Length: 432
Ligand code: HAM
Image 1 (cartoon, rainbow, N blue to C red):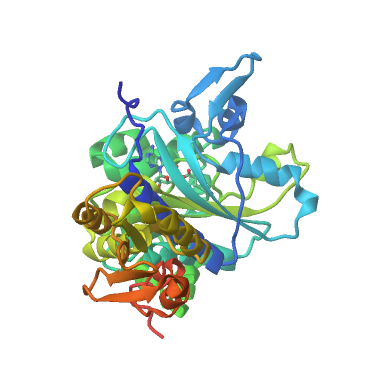
Image 2: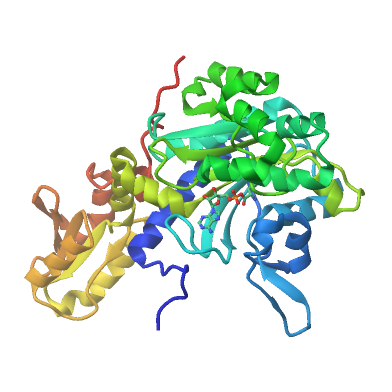
């Protein structure tokens, strides 16, 4: 039996990679003052039918539960966030800056970068209408990727403004009912032959292409770029009006993040959705909001593609997953002593491993190497002394058993796990 199409098994290596990505996401979101939240994986189907837009609704994993409720696995987190924020409006001071790492499910055609389940980091700001918050959010998206070892040559944030397109449609007297369909056509235009897009746009084709070809000026977008420049982050972003976003609820600045080579699907996408919370609460709570989500699937492909990001990941995983000490039991009658001291070492914060059954000393050293141990401690003939071997340089020293914990505490080459989890500072040029 295999996993369902589009679903992944996470073996220890893949789990370590996933945890590495999640750790960088959490650290960076916290650096921006975001706090973590989560919601249910299963929601009433209606929540998404009403709020996510037609494309996602066709991709729902939905069913009728045993209580005859129509339910769906979440394809995204934004409708859940809007529901929760509307319900707890009075409980929190605004603006909220919330992040969440959520597994999401979409019955999509499986292809590179698109599976039927994925994890998304969602970062949302609720209760803030100023453009400063849009810039802050884009800066966060950039810094998340910098924390993963990517530079300005590796990715770009393409920033656009849905309001610009709405104004455009309004100025051409296009009926409101057609806006969503036309925005979708513009959103897809990059991936479709121009003739096909032109046919679908009809009269609007010519002015739309003029804008897409770079003739659309927008003061708001210029300000966003200017503010990013102040932070030294403008080299990671560009204005690009071909970004409209497939989801129905966006109202203002929108953006998507792509690899520079254009090889992969979007790594992240989001924007402002000022009406969603009011719509969801039938007008009871009205709050401006904005956010984005970054998916782990394309990100994983991109890390593999960019050596600096891949090396950083491998170094961190190697440093954090190895055990500190492997206990070698050279004489079975020393097993009880080894267990007692092993327990004390674990209590002092060391990661300690040992063989469950008797084995040749050479075999035990091989296992020590396999688990990446930095030190082996040999319990054998020297008792009540033990041999402490530094596996990196082969140096060995006899230490009295009751001095072992103190000896290891002062041993320079055995840094604590916490010290070894540190990642080098973010890459990329942030000019001062
Ligand atoms: P989205 O653009 O639909 O936005 O998804 C965000 C990211 O999730 C994508 O850029 C991609 O990396 C990842 N993703 C989406 N679908 C899949 C899939 N089938 N397989 C793998 N990865 C996928 C949203 O979901 C919005 N709710 C984001 C948002 C938050 N807007 C405001 N706040």
